[in-house]
Image 1 (cartoon, rainbow, N blue to C red):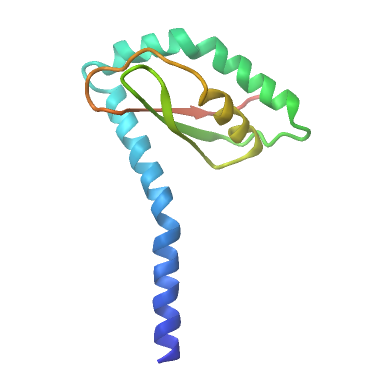
Image 2 (image 1 turned 90 degrees about the horizontal axis):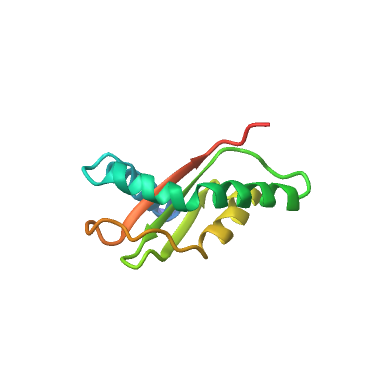
Length: 130
């Protein structure tokens, strides 16, 4: 009986731990689907026209401000509200550089998204090259 209880607890623990990653992955997938939708390319142009340079500047500032910064690749996902505000900004993996950029990104306002879906998830994959 003790082994069965331990096995059940391990299964429950694994499921509880996996849930946030599954949600993160689902949001990234939805964002990529949005990019490929009819309205996606136009929105991507507007989005990057607004955040392209600020994203580069913020990333450089984060790297410069962190001794021995972890420059591992990461993904950022966020929900764009109707007014262009960003909510549920998350990064995976949560390195020091990713967390720093997430903090800056979360304060920005981006162009209002297409009408559907609401909120409108976006994702950005970062690979830092020397």
